[in-house]
Image (cartoon, rainbow, N blue to C red; front, side, top):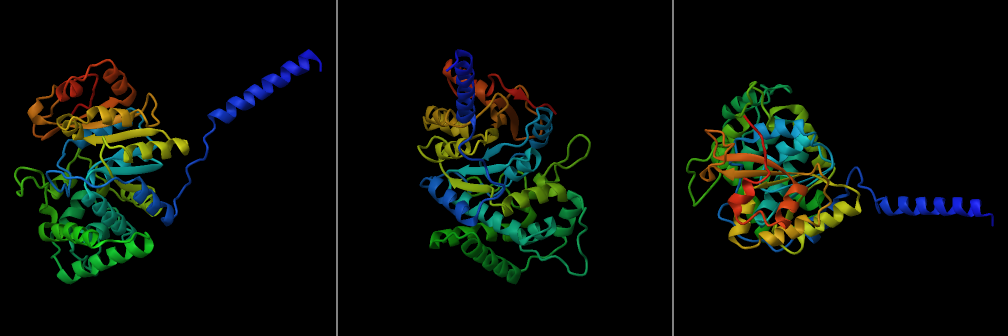
Amino acid sequence: MHKRILFSLLIVWATAGAIAQTKPVTSLPDKLTTAEFSRLMTEMSEPGGDFLSDNLISNETAYLPVLAKLKELNATGGAYIGVGPEQNFTYIAKIRPRIAFILDIRHLAAMHHLLYKALFHLSPERGQFLSRLLSRPLAKDKPLAANATAQELLDYIARTKVDDAYYTATLAEVRKTIEKDFQIKLSEMDVKELEHVLHSFKADGLEIAFRFGGGWSYFPTLREVIAQTDANGKSGHFLGSAEDYDFVRQLQMKNLIIPITGDFGGKKALAAIGDYLRKNGVTVTAFYLSNVEQYLFGDYTFSAFVANVKKLPITDQSLFIRSVLDRYDHPTHIPGHLFTMLLQRMTVFVKDYDEGKYRDYYQLVITNYIGVGK
């Protein structure tokens, strides 16, 4: 064979080999089947653990500056990973990921998110969602406007009385939806946890708040969290606009928001999420941590968490969303808020850890962070 022809063929073969190596094994589908959703939720999960509260709603009111910074940094698409209750939906609404995983050590959290998923499926509109969640039926003769503001939505629900029969019917619908439509078999404990969550929202309505040590203390209510506005008086909460709600709902309908029971420092869940994303050619855009790292340091499992982060498919644009209690007196703390919200490049986090910069939790939160301003 002529040397020039042979050389050309070698280049073609080498190029084809390089393309084959970089091409993802598969690509993420636009929607998951219910069977696949159920499989992922079950197979990725670890045994549940304990936490000091049930975390039924967010206790972080400083989330709006984070949303502005995420937009500024063009954090969009890809995969989202988060922890905790409904604040994840606000981040999802703004980031617009292709897929989302909600990872929490509490088994109750998985049931909580299955309840949310069922309510999204049953509720084409925001008012219906909040109505079912709080067991306060909408008045048929006084419909809520589709373009209602967050405050108008809150005012409408506040005027609506709780209805025990509506609660019972909603709970039955939720259970049927989870078992029949989501193909998830509920244990006796699962049912009790669903009842606990929905009954808590029924009992306290818009005044429900983060529970700590059996009391309500000084944490913000659901009404206050939803009512938060930015410097221009605009809402950022996912219930603040029909467009944001619709995006989250459609992702739920496509089975692309998957609750997983697992420990950030565990041996299975977070690593399984990383394997799945890598297999499907998706990188992490944002990982909302809340203040979980504070507890990882306390439990001496922070290094295991870092090992799991290293298994995630990340880029230089991948971001942590982190909250820091005001007791740490962070330089960027905004007065009037219990938590300071921060961002950090995930690649920077890994590099700093490898260089030994995180001797304790405080060193972590003051090292190479991205402040979000006011």
